[in-house]
Image (cartoon, rainbow, N blue to C red; front, side, top):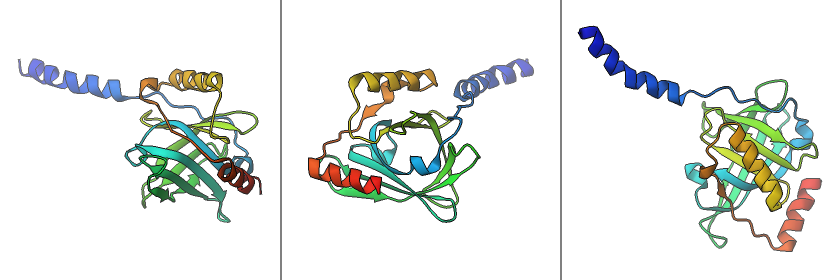
Length: 187
């Protein structure tokens, strides 16, 4: 009887643990890290607490002399007229593919960061996490055609994400600001 009670008590816990496990998430085979550097507009995401309500979100990567990645994440909070926010985590490349990173906002924690999709022209990318709790769809331009966006959403669903949680990030750039950002990226 005691074993039966113990097993029935453990069953919900075991089911919960099995339900929370995720299969490994493949990253792209190789990233030319120099081509990947620069500005990426965040088109959509499953937002972290910091990103909820973000507008004009841009992630910028620059390679440091020590091989780490200086990352600058900027956005306007709450509306296009909101307060500018800026975060500067550091990326640590974890393997020879250059596609699996640790992203460090606070020492010593390095969050899982995987380049799971990257088009051949390095104009669109998807960053995922094995936990499948957050995802970022990014582009070198602030807009994606509806067909491109839908294809990427389908891809994100195919790797185990709940696509109903994905939120579009509002992007509205006056032509002059956009040109300056793109010019800076091409230097």
